[in-house]
Length: 88
Image (cartoon, rainbow, N blue to C red; front, side):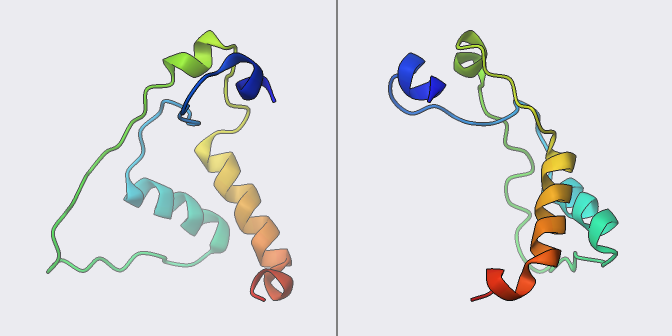
């Protein structure tokens, strides 16, 4: 609601921190107890980092309440305990 009241146009919802796919996969691996990554080295590396400008968010007073690690942990835990209904 705050974004609709204070913002105009597209706004990136992000933390402003940059993570690699490997870092995100490692965080998920800690919580899932699975080795999630099997790299296909025959494919191009692609974009190593992507970081968004969150200055508009900060000017509106928005700061994320969750880190990537906490968000991935809670999402994985929800999915693991709701797998049957989530897969329908």
